[in-house]
Length: 293
Image (cartoon, rainbow, N blue to C red):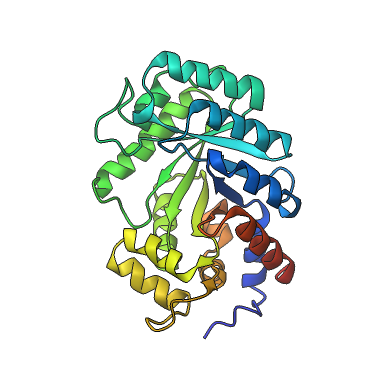
C-alpha cells in the first residue's frame, strides 16, 4: 500500500511539479475568505472566479479586483449561456481589463438548457471576437476525464480542437481545466489521450480540497454511485465512519505516482475548496512543506 507520508524518489519531484503553480477556485462571495487565507497562498497564484447564478456582474468584478489587489492572478469564468447580450459581455470584459488587469479567462457553456443571449456555448463566445484586444495570455476551457452526461466523446474532442483553433486565431493560448474527480485512473488515462491527440496545452487537474466527509460524499454523489464508491476507497472511509474531515492526500500522491511529467506534458493541480478556501490553502501549504523535493 502507498505510504502517503514518504513519497519515493520518483513521486517526490512529481508532487513538487504538480503543486508548484497550483490554482484555486472561488466565488464572488468568497472574497472575505480569500482575504483571511491570503497569508498562506503564494503570491501570483491563479485564482479562478466562478460565474454562478445569483451573483451579479458587480460582485464578480469586485472579486477580480480584490484578487489582483491581494497579489494573486484573477482568472474570471464566463458562462456563455448566462450572458444576455453583446453589450453586457463587452462591458464586463472591459471592466475586468481596466480594473483587474486580467490576463486569463475561463469560458464554459454553462448550465441553462437555452441561452439567455447570443452565446450558445463556449466556442460561440470565443468566435465572437470579444476576447480580442484584451491582452489575454490564455483562455481556459473545460476538460472531462470521466465524460459528460449530455455530450458524447467524439463531440467533446471536436469541441476541444475547435476551441484551440479559434483561440490560436486570436493569438491566445489554451489551458484545459478539468472537472473535479476522486479517482486518478480515468484522469491519467484521459491526459494520455489528450496528448495522443496532439494537444500540448497546460492541463489543470481538478482536485477536491479537504472537507467534511459528508460534504465530500454529497459532491461525489453528484457524479454518480461510482464516484461515491471511489471517494470512500480513495479517502479511506467506511459507511460507518462519516464524521470528521478528509483531505486529498492519497489522490494527489496517486496522481503524482502515475503521471510521467515528460510524457504527459505541462500539468498542474486546481483545487475546488469544498471545505472552504482557508482550509484548502492551509492544506496545500502544509502538504508542500511536508513533501518539498
